[in-house]
Amino acid sequence: MSAAKPQAGTMLGHPKGLFLLFTTELWERFSYYAMRAILVLYLVDQVSNQGGHGLGWTQADALSLYGTFTGLVYLTPLIGGWLADNYLGQRKAIYLGGALMAAGQFMLGTPHAWVPGMETEMFYLGLGTLILGNGLFKPNISTMVGDLYEEGDHRRDGAFTIFYMGINVGAFLSGIIVGSVVEAYDGNFQAGFICAGIGMVISLIIQFVFAQRLLGDIGTVPAAKLEKQQATEVRKEPLTKVERDRIKVIMVMGLFTIVFWAGFEQAGGLMNLFTNDFTDRMIGDWEVPTTWFQSLNAMFIVIFAPVIASIWVRMGDREPTSPVKFAMGLILLGIGFLFMMGAVFEMGGDANAKSSMLWLVGAYFFHTMGELCLSPIGLSMVTKLAPLRIASLMMGAWFLFVAIANKVGGIIGSFIGHGGEAEEQLANAMSIFSGIAITAAVSGIILYFMADKLVDWMHGAEDAHPKTEEEALEEEVAVTADHEGIKS
Image 1 (cartoon, rainbow, N blue to C red):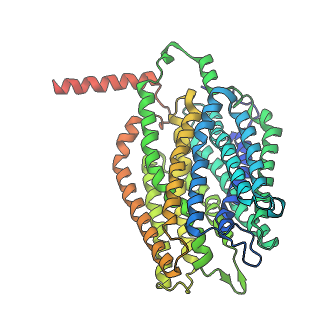
Image 2 (image 1 turned 90 degrees about the vertical axis):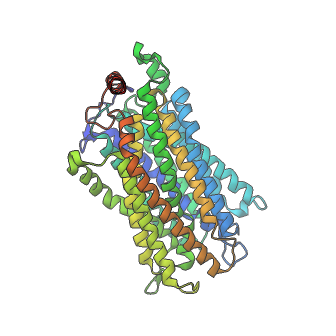
Image 3 (image 1 turned 120 degrees about the horizontal axis):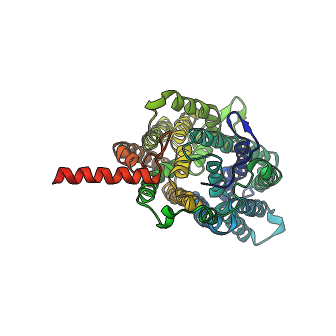
């Protein structure tokens, strides 16, 4: 049950509203990833150096702050989802969140000369505003994608894959554009933050102009109010057994999501610094900007997301379940970190040596393959399993797991050390890469063997024609009766 579906027609077999949400999220993610690509580099850039424009933090402090920031970015959606479900509605939450995010980016881009002596305070104010805005924006646009489709619509997984491509087109453009802007302004990272703010404004304008025409009433009424209007006698119980089982699946899968994203998010932190300090980025006489490597993941997603989606469709009844796909994602993440270990091995402990860019390309490729097996599938799974009246809240809870993962990832990355000897940092990086590889592989194996039980708890939510709650409950009663008969 959801708000009235729009009547704007379809494009490529999907509601046109999907492509509006695709474009809105594209520019919002451009804004976020543009900022993410330069945040750590900005923090460690020494103001005292000639041409330096940063805050002069140590690498360990910068990575710890990065983990805290990205953690809070995924924590506040829990609050934003609740506000949208109960008071604002998803569409108002998106407008308000987008405006706050744009303001935050422009605060980060405020030139130091304008606020002498208060550079750090402006930096924290900008980050705080970004965090609050993201909390309102992120869970609600994802929930609206699910609301475009009726329960059991087989197009939903494909829709989230298309939506995910929008995220990554934005991410791909961000690394290249912001890197070029920073370079054009002689290493001034604050020009990059301004560029990110402009991307967020574009996102808001697109959503405001086309939302009513392409989305109809979707997202205008708070979900709790909507369900109260549509409630039946069967729905009086706060949470049915089927709903509780499905929420358990979300919680268990969320724990494994922490492992994946804690490793994956090294891309913006530790791997970003490794690229900057220990990688040979020269092609002839030209040095590839560090930020460009942040676009590799997004480029691979745009190229391979349709391929992976096609593979799932072609497999038909043999398509892996969501838990098995998650397990595959964790294994692929571990393989990616084997390439980072290879990069360190190539240097032979000599910090003055440089590793080949190909190791990074390989690592980002396998991380991307893992992401495609896990992230869009997770978003789709939450919209299938979450009860309507707490749909955005559960999406926020899902991002809470990502929040924990980002903080854990920042802590792990900070183990590289506080600006000590380069050889020591290299040895620490090797320990971190190998530890993540082993943890990811073991977690994937454990989840694979838990998959059947998790699918049982879904009560047919992934079937082409999912059972109603009443049918699932009747089946549960029948199975329980059979077990009781066997016992007696």
